[in-house]
Length: 72
Image 1 (cartoon, rainbow, N blue to C red):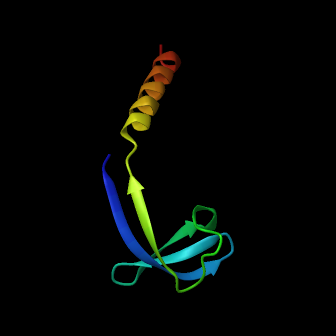
Image 2: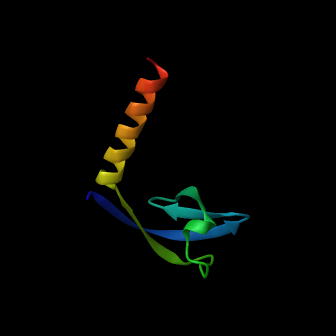
């Protein structure tokens, strides 16, 4: 499984989103439901992303089968 890990800072919480700072002051919005409930502004969190190759392969196959049915 291919993975990537990155520590980021919770810059602020706005509505349903956390504004997350990474790198050289760059930011992006992350839905708060994806974070621990106790997260607060200033917390440093570790994000880990992994490609789930088995699930990706299965989904690709399902989409190909659906396309075949739709475009007969």
